[in-house]
Length: 479
Image (cartoon, rainbow, N blue to C red; front, side):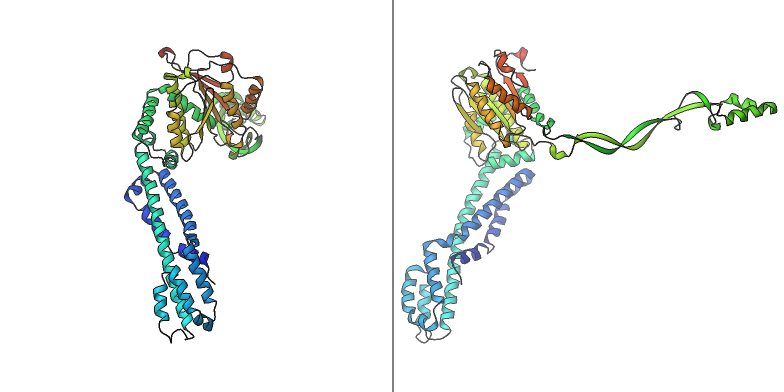
């Protein structure tokens, strides 16, 4: 007994999708960019695979359209009739087919012969022809829909290629992880002004070697942290150990009494020159009183040594996200604003390469958040870079928001970087206590001061402080 779902599944598995996927992946432009980077190739294959699964499900559901559902229900009722009832209801069936099926013409021809309809084999033959017509119509409907989806997929893939080609500053490193995630983010179509904006900050970041150095240092800090909850366990493991041994004849270090004839001093042989003194030699030999060279040297032996280390490498924490709290008040306009945006741009690229996330909290008199590394993160990056700084400074609210985020599991081993002129009051005590707890869990708090001024009490909150000011005499200083 066949229903509309069985029709859909049968046709969705007809091989049309596999052929469409092969055709897409064999496009020359897509093959070239896929071969340029393993990261892009993996991301592209993943995208096409997801598209294939989604379209397979959609093709299976095309039969629920009213036209096909009505005809399949009519077919279902017809095959359940006996031969006599089918012959009697054939005229009514033709009327219904004229409304809902392209099989009506063929059906009319089959029913036009009066002797055919009363044949015991007529119903079976008629329904088989009808089934083939339904399958063909469904197949064509699926093919037409799949072509539309394939064109949409190709348009999306070509758009991503165009976007990546418009951002050579972000793709020049060739890092596979970074390029793979950039592919995921590159669905946005960029206007010329937006491409120029990205290039502007890429060029500015290249010109600021100090900012690049800060970004690289921030990227490395998460590697130096292990799980604070993992205890050091004693482990015995074989190691090569150097030992000082007299049996190793590397150096002469002195003279001592012994019975080793191979290390005998020459003057001891004088006793053997005279028969009356020979007995003294043998007495010294028996009593281990012959004068011997004392030798000593180093020898390496494999011994079991007890050491204390993490029970397994798994105890190392995964690198957490970057959380950038950026002061967007009016006092940050000009050089500080460009530095803040350029550092965020640089950290985003490090996050992409290291499979980390990068969040931005813009704070003045209000909070605005951006997630720069999500699927449509390129649009977020552009919105962030084009934002104009204005208003006052409410740093406590920004720190509270960051602390709230860092208490969640996905923010373990996170790096909070506050970029500001720090012309603001110190945080309240309850916020300081929360920050202290997060530091104990190996989250790190950094600050980049973009002004010659700032509240010293506020800046004491952070583990690391970089002073990056417009003054050429004081461009980079790390506490």
